[in-house]
Image (cartoon, rainbow, N blue to C red; front, side, top):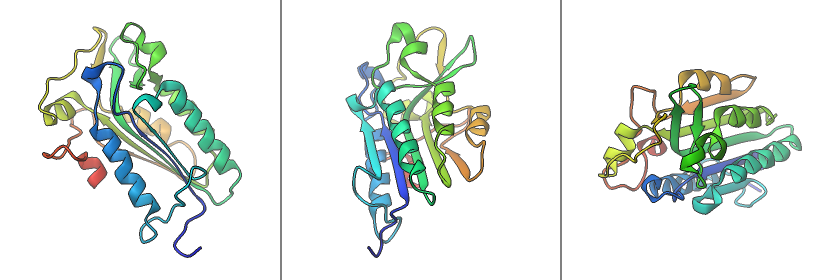
Length: 209
């Protein structure tokens, strides 16, 4: 079909509502939907608009297990297509364990009392990405930094467990994710920067760019 890129596959994650209301970021769902619109536009990317090529995870559907299952799904889809291009997009909170230096992506079902078991660790995320043997893999990480996302939402930064800080994705993790041929990783900000939302609250600046 003209204008359709049948080799394109994507897992798009906008955490949106969190089990803890103070961590909810509705704009992340808008980010995810905006990227989907770009991907399925025949004049832009031309991805087929069906569940065999694009999977969306948001709000209560963006749990830790659902994200891992989505990455497994993406690995399975691309394994059947030698010409595949895969996209993984995550928009949500990222936390650093100040004691161990471990980094975690915050899913919908976070347990404040057991962050290391309920959030998605960078090790598990990286391991899942390495199982995706697509010809090309693009990873977009819009992990908010407290000074950026919270301020832009005109609300105070959420209270975190004592041993954790809200951080942008570490440079070392970006380098790990890039390991392998045909892979590229795009991060919205460094540790010293902020991930920002438009003044009208509609989209993250990273998504617009």
